[in-house]
Image 1: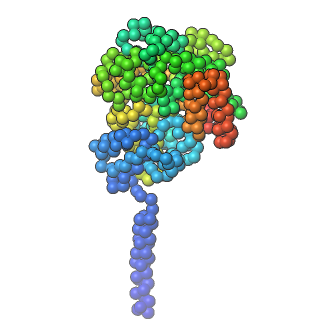
Image 2: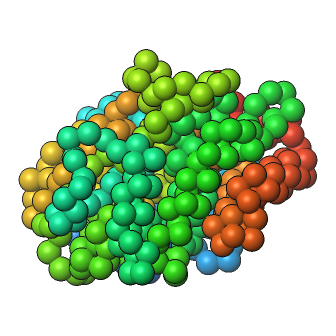
Image 3: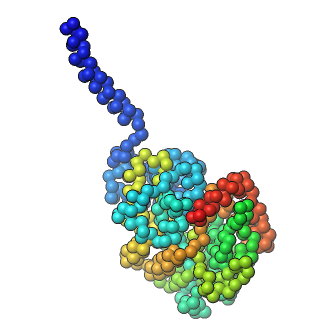
Length: 443
């Protein structure tokens, strides 16, 4: 009896000891907790220099270890599965959302004073990073192409925005023996240059229309846009140039006129001789028929989809720490990141002011003011950021290059691009692509 009583007395203690042991085991086997000893994993669709800048900048403000890795041949799903935060082009947003690879940012986080979400420029806040009725990322900016002019181009009147027709005439007047004008057409830039021109004239529909999700890139405003680009290309340098090369050459005086934007990563001569103005506009806009662009139809901003956004992966191990890093990248760390990427640009009202106060380049200050105004417009053509966006853009770029080298007419090139787009949509399921396009437009 005495032994039985002893056992009964010890039983509660044994049970408690057993529960404690079980709890400890569960915690140790569970997912890693946010901790200053657990590195944040950041994947970047950018250069090694960009990744290094994130690491060194974050180290200066936080004890949280961080490992930033440049994305190689991995699929987006693999990237998301093995990282906490992803820095990616906005054109990948649709795929990331539809495949459940990134998480929506909660209203509580967006309302945090340290983030100041409402200070993001309207088109970045409401178009670039939004999908449907939710926000899935924070913007690092979206470069806006402008007209770049050297002081010695006396024929240019900066008081009035050029039309693309006037731009073409000015390009031609600068001569062909030694090309004096250019825009970025390398590295997929031909498709973007074409879409930029088309966006200036096409009111609606934009890129696709109808339940059949039919591409409209063979319609009149698109054909005219490509014809204008082909005409200008005849007076550009023979080789295709990148954004950086266009900026370097106009700063050095090798070009006198260009469409592009300042590149802070480029080292070259003083840019004080470069004036910056709004990008050319269309002399006529197309709304079932050609109409004079007299201002009665509001202009639309054009977002290329190459601007970078920061998104939290669905496989994120440290949500709070990752959001803190995303906040830092779009606030205190933004200026440093901008100096290492042509895809990072002015993104906020407040940062536009603070960055301009510290930048010595008058050209960049001038550019930021114009870009801020452009990205504050009420209307914008959404970037192509549905699933398979890279495939659509690659097919379009291939066709545009055929028109630019003279192997195809503008009409034939766009017909080829349209057929390729239809094939991509069919392979991906037209209904899914149409629904994604509606969500991308906030419908």
